[in-house]
Length: 587
Image 1 (cartoon, rainbow, N blue to C red):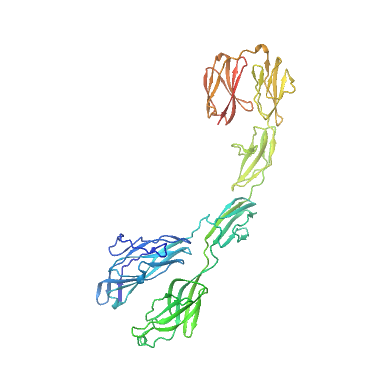
Image 2 (image 1 turned 180 degrees about the horizontal axis):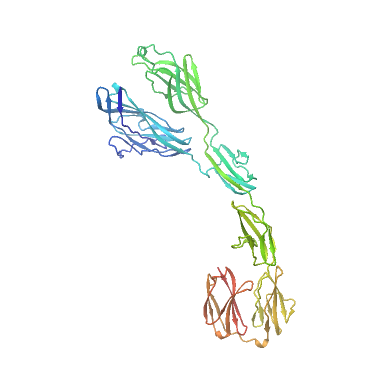
């Protein structure tokens, strides 16, 4: 009979302060000259966090109404009444003119706002359903218009991978022991499920052992409270008597409504009036919170202006109960209670990864070819050879040629990072080098090193009680040295012939090195007459000669790019065997 083409837009606001009021932003100018909202979407909320947003709405002043037989008519709105806003559990709303029961007259001001406030107790995607009753100048003919619309609202869980607990040693090879640190102390209830068959309600659980390879989910929840929350969500009056005695009720259906009282007789809710609506009649409520006490629902029938409303009776129920149906004579009331289990302060799932270790490798030493070889290869395994507990660079094959004597072992690592080490083996490799002795006046010496024992010889006979790296020559003859390392390898030096008649005065010579420590080169300065000197040589600390350069000028640069980091000796060879040795470091 009547057709409306209403264009209407409405807006919501959120406030942290339950006692604060939102203030409409009258600087907001809508794109449409007649209506709009700012902002036009609801902000995302988080469980257990205050929800806060202010939205301003601009109400339409008029609209076009088509009335059968009269065509289209421009009508002016006289009142907007916000009757309900459905929200997730934990959120509430309040308009900026609650003193007028959220009625808005756009002819006075088009601006208004609503506060949505509280702490969401559940997460998900919700539709905030808004119901508004609009009254205009023809409402007396066609009745008021009820307008409903929805705004999407997303509430996210307020959790993260580390918001509940921390784990140490959460990934590794079986058997794996994992320690847990609770990040939320002093809460009411804890629940741990470690995924290995063990559970705990302790605030700080003991270490957990995972003996088998696998992926284990650890589920942790922590609650501030152990008590559920209860909300009255709907009321239905299925049957009632005691109305229809007044003149206003003779030709119409009842106009039921109800009041909700707590056990102290305080009215905590008043429903809307269901005009000319026969039983059963129902009301969807805005999630009214209930306490552990008795409540009463008092049902009434509204009459006209000349008679009093009819009391149809009342029923009682406990707030901490389930949905039920209660009766009192002919009065039958069905109510729905929503029980919300205590939401966790933190609800976190994290993962523990436990892997199998590879089979322990073993290897053999071929003394003739000086080669270490893996006994049996395994697929999907990487290898690393170790010497004296240190990995050998680029030694990742199933065989390796050792360069030094010492303890060797092989480490195999699978794709998950789990490793197995072979047993240590003592491998003896004797180097092929000749220690070179240095004569300075009456002192014959070799590099001092803790890895060698020193045996001095004169004309082929061992000199007793001489076990130092140097000797003071007191007899003329040929001196030599035998080095014996800790593995039993022996190294014979060159022979030095010592004669007191060959000792000459030391020429004033200065040997300088810069920089020291060096990086990739050193500059060498030689003072004095070059006729007395022939070569510059660099030795490592085991006495091996690495560089030999002829001395042609007083200043020269030596490139050290091919040397490894460590300590070295620079030797200036003298034609009369009065050599000079200086030490330098390479970083």
